[in-house]
Length: 212
Image 1: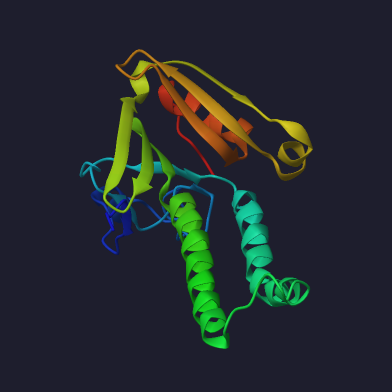
Image 2: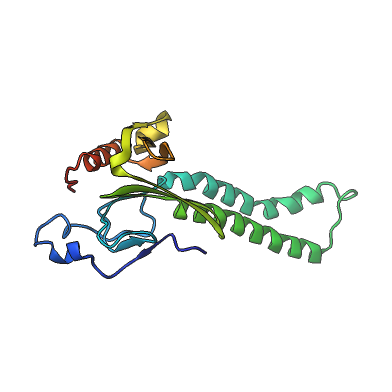
């Protein structure tokens, strides 16, 4: 599996020199399933420069895992219901117990693989905003990922939209960033606190300090 980001216990020179009570000192460690982290502590990604500071870490809201979890739970009950279905048509369907056992095992392995794939895809599709650039890492599969970036100085326009009742209730939405680079548009889909994300990126592009 490719390394998209990794925790680092070594602090950057900026962090070491930060005075007590400063913004850097207030940074918190990134939780495993966090979808939003401002000034995450101990986080490092592959192409990060030595003096580059991570301001914001994002991935899709955790609520996006719920549909696949519900589907996975439903699929787990299929082997329980299936024998009752077969017993209703004894003249048409007749399977030996060994076939049923083997089929059930393969079924649960497939369901586990399905749920694991969806979780990994969610976990490794991340958005990072640093003091120098915005980074979009798209996890395609175990051997393929896409890495897109743009300098914050090239940001021309930034906006967000929140769709539907769930988006309003749980405060997540899509953040659209238009840049002057080769990739003119970046879209952070379904991220938490989209209004705050827009404000933070706007402050960074204007050269302002982002506070907790």
